[in-house]
Amino acid sequence: MSEISSTPSAQSRPPSGPLGLYVHVPFCATTCDFCAFYQTAPTAEGIAQYLDGIEREMQLVPPSRPVSTIFWGGGTPGLLSPNALRRLGERVRDYAGNEIIEWTVEMAPASVTDARLAVLKEIGVTRISMGAQSFSPELLDALGRQHTREQVFRAYERVRAADFASVNLDLMFALPGQTEAEWLADIDQAVALAPDHLSTYCLTFEEDTKLWVKLSEGRVKLDTEHEARLYEQTWEHLEAAGYGQYEVANFARPGHRCQHNLNTWHMHEWIGLGPAAASQYDDLRSANFSDLRAWLDDVDTGQRASDDQTQLTPNLLAQDALIFGLRLTEGIDPVALAKRFPTSQWTRARGVLMDLITDGLAVKAGSMIKLTTPGRLLADAVGGAILDAMDPAA
Image 1 (tube, rainbow, N blue to C red):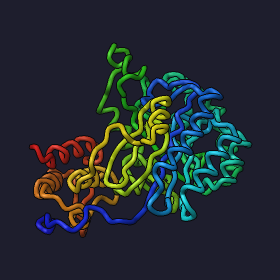
Image 2 (cartoon, rainbow, N blue to C red):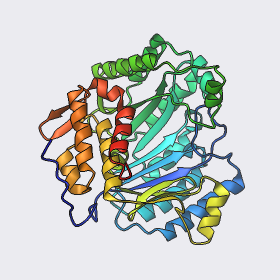
Image 3 (cartoon, rainbow, N blue to C red):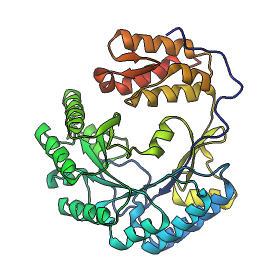
């Protein structure tokens, strides 16, 4: 590990490279029990104000170079009408430039219609990510999801018929009352549909959600050993089904990895538009207000990304590049990262990496260091150790 250098270079990040664009569409018909993302009920007036606000915000932050990847998240972007989707898409396309390699839109099964899909295809969307979460009616109900198992199947058929380059399904595990057999049945059903990409998320209990209240009241309980077994079963089953794991929660067939997320995890730049959207751009990490009215007021006064601002430093970028990089199956190249993000804290980071290897939580393969299976099960704890070690105040 002695080859990790702490010699500073002239600049903490390259002046160019992949530039992402994230657009937050905050409208949702209902709030799922587990969801902590900002959302608001759709109204004709609210949607019109939102579209106007996006166009004004674009004028406040002209991109320094063409956008490589686009991601529309929410909320439920698919709740917008076909005309609203077309208007938003045309503005985004003009803003982004002509070098887009991937354009992802999240959709809920109940919002998938042929008319919406036709517009998304027309404007250039290449990837649909659909939140199925489960195929079990009982578990869907426990999550507060507003779609049925049958709607997932019908929506998936429509998406496939529209012939997008990539289709992703989101699943969740460790749900209240979910058995190992039920989770494996969900995996088998997803594999039978043959999506190009699968994201499998362990349920987390976020504050200010209905599930958090149930946890605090003792109506649901955490079982970390059960979660660990489900993690390992997921990895084994999806590998056997031909899905290559490239991140702790993400699996893809060859050629279908999500480039937008990869660029984010590699600490490249992205611009966030819309209420609650975060940005990492122009030496600043920041967020828009998580409120439609407050965001509109900000934009109307010629401001944006004025909430939770943090100046990007080589040490901060190095921390996050290590944390997110170690979640990737390929791991990290510490020498390359030390050159890209020079910081005096690399000596401490080296100590954490050496401890991980000694404890069997990571291995070194050539220039790369990657987590072992036990290490991936403790990825959050690994991230915490890196943060503690590289804290300049420590």
